[in-house]
Length: 115
Length: 112
Image (tube, rainbow over all chains, first blue to last red; front, side, top):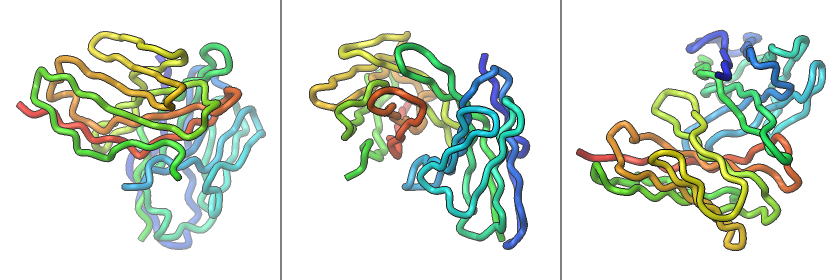
């Protein structure tokens, strides 16, 4: 079974703090993703990584950065947290299936509240 | 125009009935299609994927793909209260690859 874990289920931070969200997968997947999910807006891709030290911006990268120093770990960093970054953050890793298709598997999520 | 569209619901069905969830997508070249189930407060869980036109069955779930009409559907037979959740449709890009585009989901309620 694919296992994706996230460091915290719930997190409360103050405006202006630097926030680290950690994600670890144990299946040797090359590809990892960070999403945020908000009511009515669905899942939006923040960043993804296709290899160690390789990253690519998603649809909403502003205010975020990422780090991938090891294959199994992908970190999302909020440089200076703001209230509009209050959201559910979901990490995923993907498995190559067939043809050119990949399946994504999600971690349990981190509900971040910025006050 | 949204790239992946789903009716937000809620879709209410009685226990034991067939629930039909639909999704349309805009990129005609999309090659892979996924259905995720998400319980309230939980993360999405992959339940079905389909790559070829036609039907794919897995237990009580059937995914249907019609590339010409650009829609994909999920049928849930013998619906149970435990099926009550939000169902997300996700579409892979033209040419294949990693990045999925998600719909906003359809909320399903199975009533006793």
